[in-house]
Image (tube, rainbow, N blue to C red):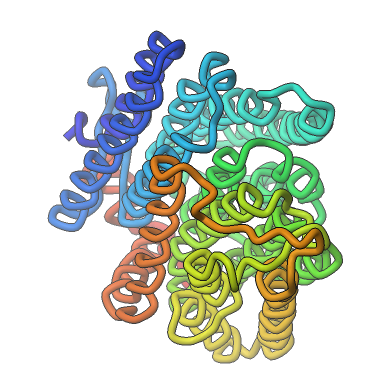
Length: 509
């Protein structure tokens, strides 16, 4: 069982070493692709075992929990690792045509694989200190990818990115220290019952808010998001796509885990804060997107906006709301990464991502136009694509909980998302190119064309499958939400059947 849980972490690290050793030749890029495929296979094996056997846990080095390093996977962890594998493989293939030889020699593929290892480690760890370690692995590798190339815009975005993330790290470590001092443990399963015995519940809420801010920076929620639109449009498209798909979702996942498993002693206070954060995140993100005129900047602000929907599900804290949040989390990773990949192809054949400098793509590159419309319509919530079902469940959950205002905010933000996607369509695809250029996919070499288009098409097909056949995905999200709200199986898998306080503090939505 330990190998099943460790493989999604070990494989990317091993791939990173090999890719670095062979970085001066074409072998490095293919090692990255094969390693990403192996990661996806290991993730599928993990998912199969979780579906068959329930929550899986393993103690590294045979040190028993809560004293040792624990790896644990429930349904949410497993699906996040699977989505990491899917996105990682798609972007690795895309990078064959997107990343130039100089960046490969600087170690692009090695850093990329280290980033994937950090993401998987964050999803699978069972204790807070190791979550901090995986955050640092992600921060180091993502900073290297962000500034690779060394132009002024990249360095400016990289400094903003790393500075605020270091502030988040300090808050996170401070919160870890305080929580350990109060409970004597950092194992998440053990913390579930340990926080119930804390003698100063007011101080516990303060620590909870510290974690909320620390993870909120990682997730790019209001008002801590400004580093994201300042940096995500600066690196190569492959880097932008994997950042857009995965990095902020690790912060969202951490919020989900901590505020369903650990910080549930004062839900009325903590989750009300999250509700306000969700509303402001949705609104500020979509308004920022509406004001932008660059393809990638618009998409960057929409990352912020869509994070608000996920936090909304956590804040409402009802079974249906968490179903919508889990569904939205999975759908958004695929759609957002795909939109950045489309932006990269548009820039390659039209010459820019500035909307006033490109055009004519619908007439001269109809396949690309179709591949843009699918994730764009899904992001905006058009039926029957995946985004429609995610938003429908969340709005329904808000209405059932009496949250008429936040439901209205979610609907208005959806309309403004349509406006932004329409602006991209009208400028990049519908109007003629201002320079009279006729951008076509045939201008790309056939080998590069396949590497660029196949991942986009595969992710678009996956989006359609989720939208046209939502029932199994909704059922999976329902089971995931049930595990979050009733964590006994998680605690038992980590600490054993005789875990103290196993049913001491069952979460009541």
